[in-house]
Image (tube, rainbow, N blue to C red; front, side):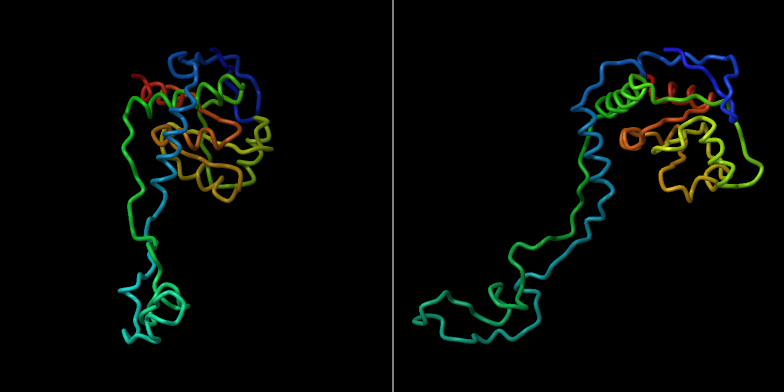
Length: 209
């Protein structure tokens, strides 16, 4: 698949970039995408939730009422789960939500996500650029020139560039990451994917397997 290379003014430079069909042109695997996104979101969870159970609640262990003969269930002490302020039955405990996922499945998921973007013509290639100072207004102008400013945008750089990152940081629908940080979730979460020329090569090198 060939894509034209644009400059930051939105003009066609006349150059073209050929995307590797082994990465951007495969038949997407939806189940692999589901598993990879599920693992990514699971890893974002802190898992620090905790509620006190009966033995952990502070209170007297004296039985409040007679245990039998009253017609109702036995309640025991004031820490009983059936009373307001008592402990919780089988409450949440701190845990790790992460789970194992094979490298080949993760690789397939990422290639599938990129292939979906390529199939939907949602990938724009821009020539490598840098900014003299971090300026959000200038970044917005670049996005408008490339006709990707109206929807969620993910810009992929070959390496970390603080000037570009700081320029886009305050934009709600825009994310800037490096090619090595690319994952299935961020690709699918964006509507438009903007790759610089050098980042295309880095992505293909990282995902080649």
